[in-house]
Each structure stands twice: as structure tokens, then as C-alpha cells.
Amino acid sequence: MTIETGSTNVYAHLGMPDAEEMLIKAQLAAKIGEIIKHRRLTQSKAAEIMGIPQPKVSAMLRGQFRGISEAKMLEAIARLGLEVKIVIGPSRRRSSPGHVELEMV
Image (cartoon, rainbow, N blue to C red):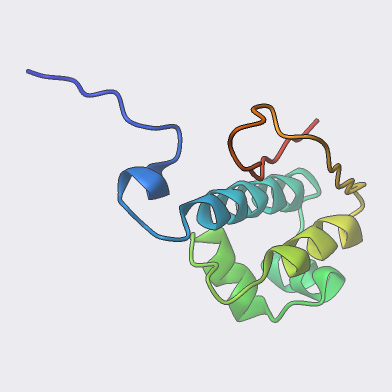
């Protein structure tokens, strides 16, 4: 049996052109799911709080988030009571472009 080490981004490993965006959305959707579970909210109540239709919340929690923007997901997290902070800084490597990274505390 051979085990291959893949990238830390499954979407990049699959060759998707929007891999970085998809990874960020997956992380945001997972965080939204955690918050909903922690607060013991129904999907309907969470949808009302977040300002997102319940069917879209359901789809997002199942990993179908192409129709929801990153901005809308960040707004939803804020509406659920968490602080959202966006930090812009220099690239770690001067010779390459910067990248988007999500850090949750």
C-alpha cells in the first residue's frame, strides 16, 4: 500500500481553479456549523439570525456553498455573535504573491 501526502487544500489537490476560495468557504461553513451547534439553534432560527434563507443554510452546512459569497458568510458569523477581523499584511515571501489565509481563535 502506498500513501501519498497531498496538499493541505483538498480543492487544490483536485485541481480546482478556485481552490483557495473554496477552502476559505469550507472553513467558514464549518465555523458557522460549530456556532449553530454550540448555540443549539435550529437551521430556521440560525437562518433568521444570519439573514440567509434556510435552504441555503442547509446547503452550506452540507458543503454546498458556491452560491454564498465569502462576505455573506463573514457577515453571518458576525450576526451569530462572533467578532470578525480582517488583517492585511506583507507577503511572507517577497518574490511571490500574497495569499488568503483564515485564522480562527
